[in-house]
Length: 262
Image 1 (cartoon, helix red, strand yellow):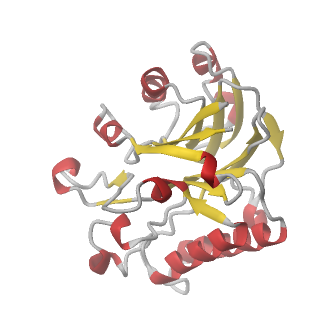
Image 2 (cartoon, helix red, strand yellow):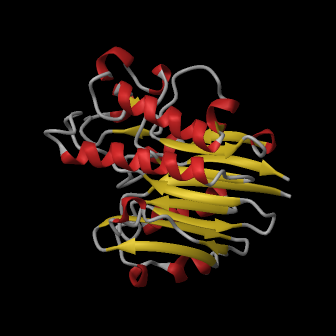
């Protein structure tokens, strides 16, 4: 059984419903995980996607912020979500596929602009979020699982346009990359994208601030597909759909895709 999985920070699913439909039509992933949907569950455009064949959906949403969803052409069995730090944020949703694989979809906090938890509570929230997840996965070792989402950290030197210039910029600071490594180790996770594409610059996010994002190419790889070590050998076909960043009224993130063969 071969299943194609995509993850995408859509930056408002209602505003960019047409882009989601385009992705579904052109790329036909069996499962699409969305982050930053920015709408409550009762406002999510279920019917539009169901009419295209993605009739199974598990959504957690809130008005104007956060929000995560799993759309699927295959049946989904709900799995209890994690309310990280007990804040009520809709940053995690999970489901089990018919082949027994559990998918975790996360939207990790961005962390604001200043990498100092004393002066920037948003950065402290991000670090605490990572610490909480690390403890959770250490205590509840995942098996036969995939973790996807906007993790808001570019861990490797070649995951950013300039390692030296971004060392003090949130998403690539040493404390964040170290904590992400701890999180990976706690869950025995494997970075599937880098398993498939081990060398070279690789980005999934380009700022809206750049006048010509493509020419400037000052990107970061913030969006990830991981698998537990028992599942990673069955994963492949990784791709970042850079072209989607150039679609009309785009998200600042590009979809990341992979395939699992079981």
